[in-house]
Length: 106
Image (cartoon, rainbow, N blue to C red; front, side):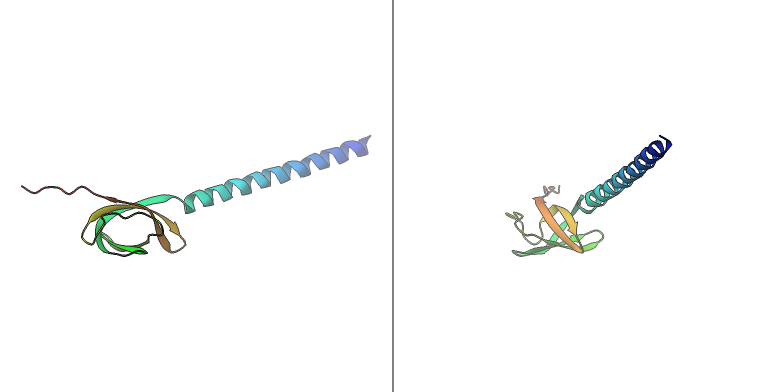
């Protein structure tokens, strides 16, 4: 009887330890994925734009974005825009480009 009890106790400890380790790994992987795909924004003036990329002049310097299939209707060099993007490795991939309203000077 003691042998069965000891074996059952050892098995339950083994499975409990495995479950805790698996849960910790899953939580860590989810955190890494969420951080890597977090969307960011940048605002500034368009320095140049073509079918594949947009160069934005911001207060912190120039930023280059890959456009992919992102629509950029009416966006031209000199336009003030806000870019929503995701970082994929070292690349910034635009998810949307929105014109900012121009302010009238008096």
